[in-house]
Length: 385
Image (cartoon, rainbow, N blue to C red):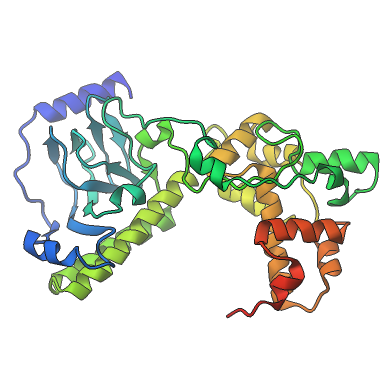
């Protein structure tokens, strides 16, 4: 945040606020008595919309709630610019394609830029599981930074972690295996000994709950396709509520709210503006690079090079974005592909093992069972569809 930006925000707050109402605006506030009845339904109870709207080119738009709101507020800036701040924290700019999640009961203020007024879609959410749906997306009050803790610690991490110690057999994975040189190359390919991974090549199932970081204090940047989905969710829900506040309509809009929260969560955990922020690179490119090489091997150095970052930085950022180290993720992609071959071809387990770069089919079978919970043969014999 620059001094110029701070001064612009101060100037905006000092100006006369725009009276309620913007040209072509859309606004729906569901009646309390209807929500009270509908919120008891099991499909509505976890998360539901109480208010929603669209303010186009909302010049002078400003809201301040010193006591916060009873609802979680989501604002998506489709065009233009604005700002927001939580508690006593500094104001954060919000630009085109960015979304802000304001937690319930948190003092806050937000407003539109005077030079480039924002056009925003917004929602107010309540429900028994609202906090869970937006976990990691909104910071706590005060400084604007979420409570930090190290990933992989605590009861959840301990309960969710399982280890696959196969360090004696890494030389059986991938091209070049079976020689001292091959062992060294394969360890590098699968991330063994790399910063942020187990020296033994252990495969770790991460905790199901993502770690909260200071990044949660920043807006969520959406790629164009996700931004389009968000606006479509608004249009669909708004059009349905316009036709009446029936229980079926409220149930449907509640399910749209689930989708909206999932989009924001995905974009926070796999940001498209570059998880490697100084390299114009994003996590999707890295995963695609891995997927193109599932029948061979890749080295950690190759992955970091195509991301245009150092190996330690790549390993750290990749794990922050996915919850897995590069070695874990790459192996899991291989096993996912193995599942498709087992489902859709008549190839033997040995043939599939070799096709995916595993020289030892017995090791492949053990790894498959660790990840999938059953052997390749058992998986193939399971009825599907």
